[in-house]
Image (tube, rainbow over all chains, first blue to last red; front, side):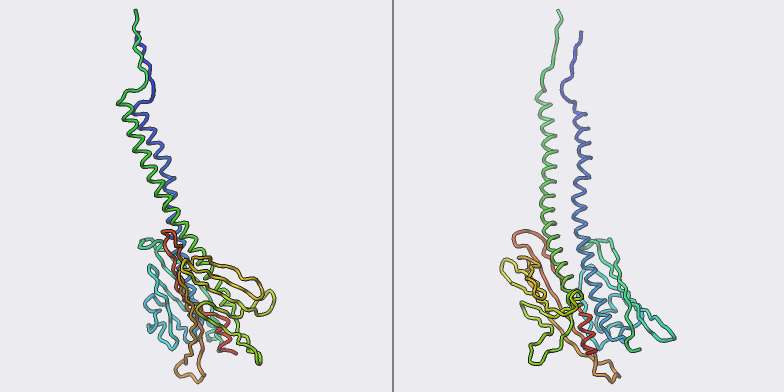
Amino acid sequence: MNNTQRHGLSMIEITISIGILALIMLPVFMTFSTGNRNMQLTEAEFRAHTAALELMEQTISLPFKQIKTGEYDDREIKDGQPFAQGPALFKITQTDNLWRELKVEDIKRDNKIVFKKVTVTIKFAAAPNSDRIREFFMKTLVANENL
Amino acid sequence: MKIFKMRKGFTLVEIIIVCGIATVFLGTAIMLFTNFRRGYSRSEGTAILMQEGALFVARLRTDLNNAVLIPDSPGGSSTQLNAGTDSLNFMVYNSHDAKAQPVVYRYLASDIGGSLFRREGTDNERELIKGHVASLTWQTNLERFIVPGSTSSGTMRLSIGLDIQLRIKSGSEKPFALKTSIFPARLNRQLNNP
């Protein structure tokens, strides 16, 4: 009579169980890195929001006639460039991985400009040196105080 | 006579292999966990700094956008916007009480990390940031500009340049730095339409 009893686990069983355990642990460790990425995104969003407020507040603080109608990209918003040719000094804080766009539209009634619609768009990298670009925009109306 | 050949326990080779696999697996898990703990601690510190900085900037921006100019009472002290190296004070219109109240921001610099306080009216001073301010400057800029061809005396514009850096001294957290300009809407309107 050949009475062969197996005790313990075979190599294949151990390997498979380790593999399953690794598969279970992988999403757990992935969650950690996702948390870190979300932190970077939150910081980038906050910086974009601050940049949008700075540009918006500065634009609407200009005299109505100086808010020039048109669409402007990041280079054209700097002091001395098409949108900001004075006489007011245009101060924009330089920020890495962030690009501004400005759109000013006329809203007319009886052929008179009663409002200007100002749209500020901020494009920003989700994380430093990341290729993932996100967009944030803010709109407001400026009334013509000269009417 | 029957001979029973029973295997009891593990062979040395089996034990060595299992120990080897367990060591590799545990080593990897411990390394990943240590890295996670370090990263988590750094992220947590950075998140605290960012939250404190964001709350302070949002609070200051709201206050400045509600700031108003109160005409000086005869013989009274000036109640305009005043910015010093360690304090920033101005009057803010409080819609709840329907009156203007002084708001004072105070910066207490320290080598181990400065603190920021805010007081409104007669309320107690509240600490906004405790021991994390590495540097802070607030600078007021008042400009007067005249649009070419205009006969008016020009337009005045007030802005506050803010530059703040937060840091936790003991940790390896990334410092949080923010530089921006704030243009108080009500103050600017009042300056141009007194």
